[in-house]
Image 1 (cartoon, rainbow, N blue to C red):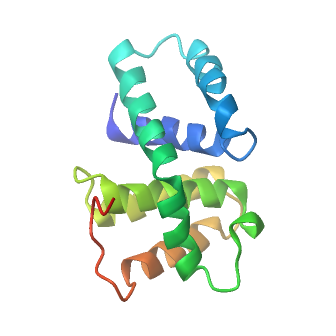
Image 2: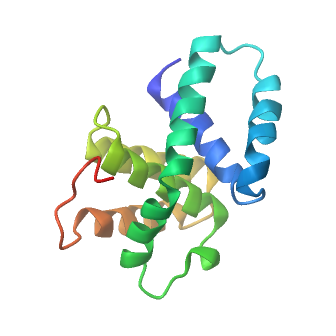
Length: 142
């Protein structure tokens, strides 16, 4: 499985967070993977690991987003946009294998596929603000 496919599956699981409580997510993960019969087990494990890592860091990720989202609450953002932004902020801050520019670009590309009109611009603008925060962008700050 290539990185783009891995990212897309991770995004879909992060998107599930918008509709389910955290305590319900283990069963949602099971349902999701039951439908993916053509994915190798090692790829399923990579997707689960990334999703669970995002879930564990969600509070910190949301703090970063809230800091730069002037005039927007997380609840007011589109669910697709918020899920993509969460994934990209995770990659920007915590995934050393993904260059920051790639994280932003991939989120914008996914927004073009899954988002509404204007989603890609919104996602790009908000992630650019995260990148330009006054404090240095440090990976693994937890």
